[in-house]
Length: 261
Image (tube, rainbow, N blue to C red; front, side, top):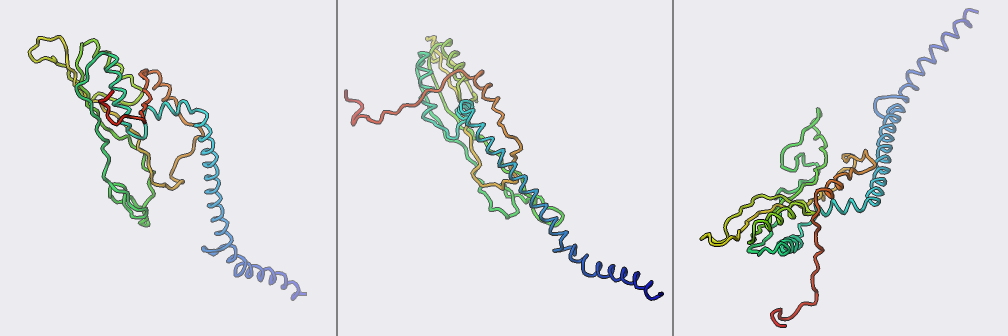
């Protein structure tokens, strides 16, 4: 009777020992146990869920851009990807001619592009060659993707005419449907002797172009938390810029000698 009574506690103790020595290590051993596998799967599932949410937002953003193509065109016309110097020359020439102003000089420079070279991923350096910040284990902390930059270039423009016409020209250039800013504007007598009422305006106009980031960036670093673009800036551009950009038409036929009739 006493032996039977002792068997039950013995079996319980043996079960506990087996649980500790066999079952528990299989559940968690700090490396590849069931608990660790489940934890890793949860992390990967969270990443997958975030990527799927980003994918849905990317598709929604693409649809939003397609549905607002008119506003998109306004923005990309205002800040184009290329400098389009022929378009600037053609439009400034047209605006001056409409105001009956004589053009003395019109030239467009090239954008100033940074000579910094992109460093390979994993170099531990940023785009300027400076060390990236590191975590406690010394591993470089991934940085946010480099934002696109607006490149600046200038047009030098000189015209001769009457003051009222110059005021009208400056106003139309300011309201041009492309981003611009007057870097300098000097108005003086066209005739140094002062015998003429004609004036000469020398102006330097700064233009911008949009320089997109061409390097592929880790999608986890890109913010796709919104499903719509904020295109309200297109309405502001339309309300402030009323001087339309002329379509540049290039005659492909030409003449062997343009000075012959």
